[in-house]
Image 1 (spheres, one colour):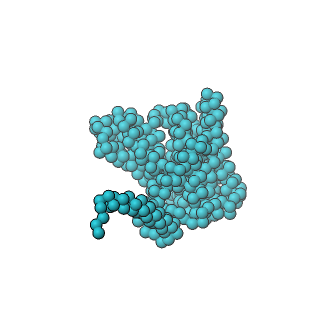
Image 2 (cartoon, rainbow, N blue to C red; image 1 turned 45 degrees about the horizontal axis):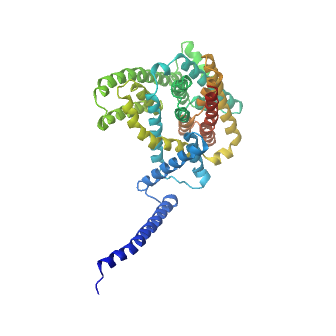
Image 3 (cartoon, one colour; image 1 turned 30 degrees about the horizontal axis):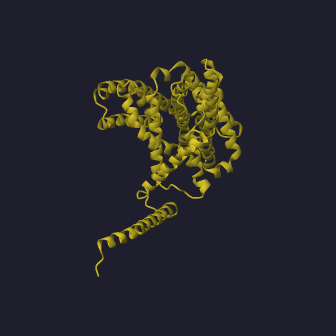
Amino acid sequence: MSISQKGLEDLSKKIYPIVLAALFAFFVILLISIVRTSLFGEVDLHKYAFFEISLLLLIAVLAEIGVIYSKQPSAILLLLVGVIMSESVLGFKIFKDEELIHLFAQLGSIFLLFKVGLHSHFKAIFSKENAVVAALGVIIPFIGGFAYATLTGGNFVYSMFLGAALTATSVGVSVAIIKEAGLMNEKFAQVIIGAAIIDDVLGLLVLSFVLNMPAGYELPQIASLFGNAVQGSITPEFRAFIIPLFNMVGATVIFLVGGILAGNWFVKSIIDKLEMNNANFLIALAFLHLYSYMAEVIGLSAIVGAFVAGLLLTNSRHIKELEDKVYPLETIFVPIFFISLGLLVNINDILAFAWPIIIISLIAILTKIIGCGIGALASKINKIESAIIGFGMAPRAEVALIVASLGLQRGALSSPEYAVISAMALLTTIFPPFFMNYLIAKRNVKK
């Protein structure tokens, strides 16, 4: 018995939704299976890399939706989301491919500072005001960290490392808040960015000095080395201090001055003579990553190189096209950068060494507020904006983490000392932005 065409159509109409429902159900089962395996099972990291990145981006989208209701900057929410998703809170590691997450986070910080460089001007960055703010933002935190470590029984090397960690400044979160508020062209924003770049250079010079100290030396022996040098006795130990420091200063000067001169020529002679299509945009990206790589190799942070690259492209005739083309990259990678900072928080370490961490974090925040705030006031910036500068310079984030990790690798820091500095770096990144956001809102009301 044959089935009519109409009968076939009626049958297909009945079967079609059942098939769709079955496929949907199987997809849900597959998804649950994959999620379960990814979170709890033994996984091939390369196979599930896309799952982890997709999950990160989904979380970033949800956090952006939360911004609308909470009226908080997305950078802060993303940081808090990262803390909630950290292993110490959940009890298991949700993201297993740490190297991939770290790579994507680095790209996020690079694209963020590159975009900031595109909106900046050279004279506004390397100004007298910025130099004053940066100098006090290094000297006062270093003294505060060194004094606390010494008074609480820390040896000379630990005291120097803590002082070096407190000189650091990582303005990724601060820049994101200022950018979101549409205040990137304001003077206080330029001071934060410029002073942070100078801080990075000065802080890493301090780190270079600390890393090359002879093992086991205390302050009297160090003073003796320099005293002998003043009297004309140049010892091998003294050379171990000075030569790496001079190498760092020389490499930094060559990179900043030579890189700016060469970069200006490249932008005018190569990039501006090309049309900014997708293929030629890759040349601009290569330029960005070359400067980031060079900065990293000589001991500066990659974000310094990214910022310089953006700064050099500010006067390009393609500035608008560059901003448009880099926006999708910024949208993808920057949220991962902020979430990754939160993921690094270890609640257990914070609880185990709660009081030292709280005290050092307060010292870290207050010394930046005092040092940078005084520098801003001396530069005739009003009180609210000086306070914004102080809080904006307070986050330590990855720069202090680099200092701590180097100390641990060289055997200069114990595991508890490393935990304390790491927790300080993350706490100073999470809390100051809340105060900064409040002060920006207060400033806008007064304006």
